[in-house]
Length: 195
Image 1 (spheres, rainbow, N blue to C red):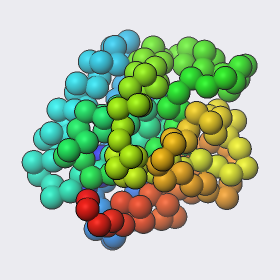
Image 2 (image 1 turned 30 degrees about the horizontal axis):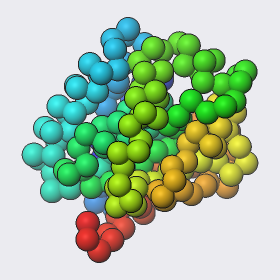
Image 3 (image 1 turned 45 degrees about the vertical axis):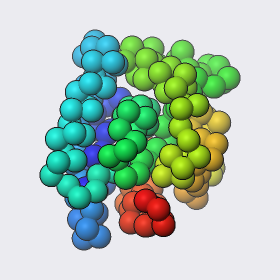
């Protein structure tokens, strides 16, 4: 089973379409709406997300987390709190730290519409050091090799994790390619020794 958290637009139907083929590979996707623009603090949202993870984990032999765009920070924050019960985590084109870019791709510009998104990124960037080398091996970070107009590469990758690119450019298109063409599901299916 995989809990999938979309980005700022909470595009549930789109993510249902992007993951429709996953069940044929034995991965049941559950799309989770964060409500990025409802004014709630990220810590409260994270508490609800963790409760959902706990509920799903009781129903599934194995549970992974997948976050696209803004959902990636939420997923990695949740992974930090549930490392012992979550199998793997995937960041699909999501910002994990503020970075140094300014303007359209800068942290302030990208997070001005959602305080909870801003808080999510800040929280993960402050707690990232808690991830062990073994934890990082269970994380996949996907970015577009031709560039992302919203998320700079240095804010998306994670040292010691499985960092890989899709052969595309553009944020949403790259998310679609990663979700539909096996980048995510192959990683979730891969069973390393010791996990």
